Image (cartoon, rainbow, N blue to C red):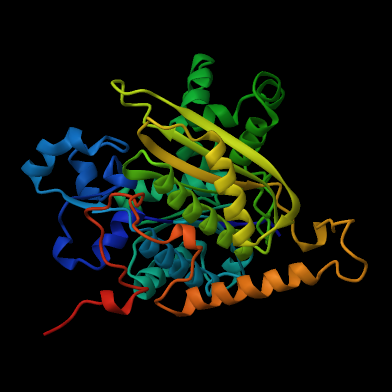
Length: 427
């Protein structure tokens, strides 16, 4: 039986999440801003219609904001993460296998479902169910490969007549769509590669599909050859039921205002190290290396610039916040230089392993090898449990105190779905 995929993608995800809880803005153009409210990272369909570009600095569209009454929102990652979870739970109830590809899209394995209902009808059922259960609009593309399913979704978004669902399981229909899709819209091609393909006369997806496979492999890569095979209906991307473990964990932010003093930077780095270690424990992993970096703002040409990083190999891989914060602060002090306006800092954990990959300390007394780790794991488990269930937060002492390093988010919406205090009040 030939495999069939459904690609489900939320429409204007960040903007749709914001509008869901603001019905008064149903037809109003809105944009969502990046960290520190710097650039546009998401737009509603109304904002797109006004020509607002992705990535444009907000200060460059001040006149459009005033002229068209565009509403601004700071990125609310707590809200977006929870809404994404609700979408994925809904999808998992509709299909036997779901591969979450990003925060707002997923692939469904719907092989054989046409024995009970047509693929197009199933796509409409997915679309309607997600909207009914979660309140977010999605489009659905259906095809025998993931690359074709992504293109089917592209068509579902682009052509209103599709009503948000495109079934591309028919080979003849596949070729008709490929002929009108620019090659840069093919999943995995991108802008730089499309320039090289266009120089060869390959301007649309159908021409890429019909290109000699050996030529693609020789002139580009085996990855592009697989893309061409997928465009021809041969599935080349394996289904992975279990996501591969992370190889690195990064926690980094630009500051809401420049920091100069070492104590302020220590608070920020301690906070980032703590947060990265929480993610580490969430994945049941241990870190063997730690990297810390700090830098000034490279876009400010009238100030002195400085950028530096430092790394340390941990004697024993760990997931203990106390040890990682201690090491992170040691690395920060080694690279800190006074007299600079620091705009960003970050902590990266690497050489990640699970418990089976841990190497014990050869110099521990016989019979006590795991006692220290066991105590550490119990303590960290208690901290994580308290932080999950309580409004009060346990953290490392160095990370407490004034949060001068917190991002600027002047247009932040409430955490409607995760904080009872943020629920709208009806009088």
